[in-house]
Every structure is written in structure tokens, then in C-alpha cells.
Image (cartoon, rainbow, N blue to C red; front, side, top):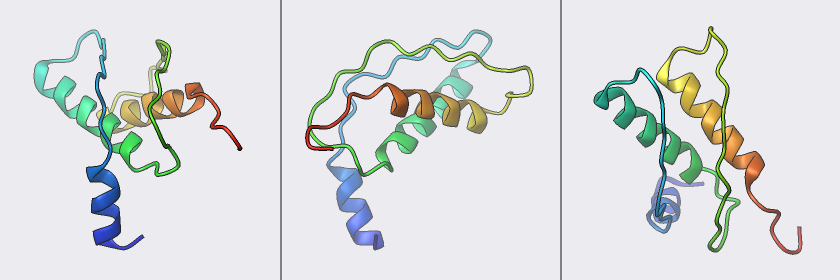
Length: 88
């Protein structure tokens, strides 16, 4: 996808609510985490239409300590929880 096409695709994505409860994170870490999760979700261009997802719980291993690792783990859990699209 070209840079222009990618920017247009990302501009059309709207996340109404993304609530993360991460014990021990300071506000800066929580902000970085929410931006990374939203970015990972936005870059998956296979989603279309509106969807509501159930609450998703993620258990982290002691080795998963970086904000980037945690963001990817949350995004993968959301990808798995999304409902199948019609016709797929």
C-alpha cells in the first residue's frame, strides 16, 4: 500500500472507546500503550464496518515487560475476538 493510500485508510478508522486497565503503569506509559494498541488495530486493513467487541482479558508473562510487547499482545487478543465478517 502506498504512503498516500495508507494515510487515507488510517484516516477513515475511528475507535470510539478503548479502555485499558494496566496496574502499575504511570500515565505516560498508559498513554503510549493506548496509542500503540490503536495504531496496531488501525494498520489491520481487513476490518470493515462497525463492530462491537466483548471485554478482552490478556495475561502477561513475567518476560513481557515492554510497552511494545504488551501492545502487540493486546492487539492480537482483539484481532482474535472480532466477529467473523459476512462472506468470509
